[in-house]
Amino acid sequence: MSWLAPGGLAAALAVGAAVAWGFGWQGLVVLFTFFLSGSLLTQLAERRAPRRTARQVIANGGVAAAAALLGAWTVAAGALAAAAADTWATELGAFSPFAPRLITTGARVARGTSGGITALGTAGGVAGAVLIALTARWVGPRGAAPGSAGLITAAGVAGMLADSLLGATLQGKFECPACDARFERGNSVCHEPVQLTTGWRWLDNDGVNLAATLVGATVAALGSRFS
Ligand SMILES: [Zn+2]
Image 1 (cartoon, rainbow, N blue to C red):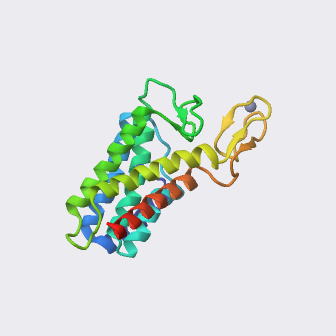
Image 2: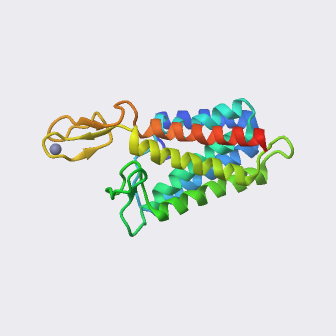
Image 3: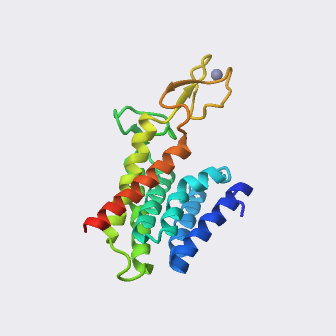
């Protein structure tokens, strides 16, 4: 498993075990659809992504695992749809001919900047959410799982938007005091140790991803209650 660091592998096995315990093979089909589609897109983008750590795995799959332990199918699907939407948006957005714009102000930002969005990436994110929603409805337990594919798609898209909004506002952004190079990790050292410019020091990309899957889960939970 060259996609996962050793800690990431342990976390992925824990998420897989929770999903299998809660939902059986049907849950694993949805989980693998998320995991494989994201990994294939990363390869398509020819990005040599660093191997996933335990933090990254929990950020993407932790909420779905918790929902699985509670037996909440639509909630877990909403969390995975959000994770898939964010992954697809990032990977397909890399092909955008235009530079991303910050979701809050519309200002052009460098590729890879948190909170930056492109039309192509956003369309890709919606497609990722649709894939998870259709898969979840296809294999989902009949009757026991309220909520349509439309609701799960909406949950995924809401999570993706939350990810961009938090990335543009509260996520910690850092700068080298000597050369103004920008960083998203507070422990980076350029010419000097980097300094916080905006956002919360402790809120990094993993924290934002976790919050985005929580938004997806919440939208799915509220939607299935009121539908
Ligand atoms: Zn520097």
